[in-house]
Length: 179
Figure 1: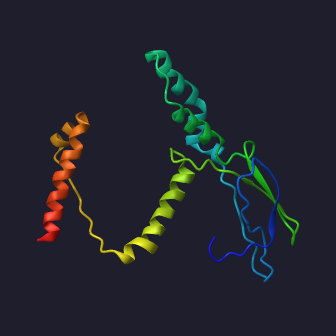
Figure 2: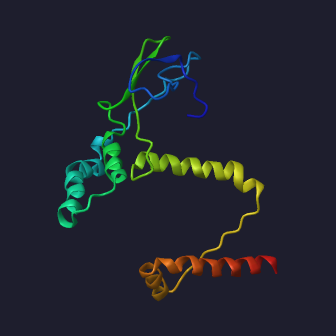
Figure 3: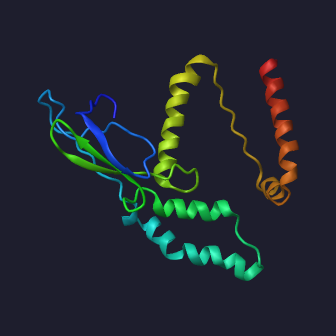
């Protein structure tokens, strides 16, 4: 929201409050058009409905077929995804002292798993950091490693070979740069 100024919204009450953001709700007092905020509604996406319908059976399947449970963090990722940006689970009520407008702000999961909201945000923040703080200050070269399909199959079947192969690639690139 670069260039947008909040109009005085302050947190009034929160359910499981985590932070207190300033969210612009309308005209900024200088006669500009009101800002529009549309809440992300994950419950209306196909991915959310798919996970909601099948998460329980997906989690139960390994337990039934192998007598082994999925790791706790996998179950937690599904639970967090199903609660992400849903007002019923966690929200902050914001009130603008200037115009009297109220807004509910749903909390997001802030997980690194498969949440598209946070995946896109993290990707955008990382790209901005690289462009603003890393790339201008260091020389950058990009090397693309393409392996023949039989070697890819071998490395997939024997992952302990990946490190030695990458060490060879690193030595070759280093030698190329130093010559």
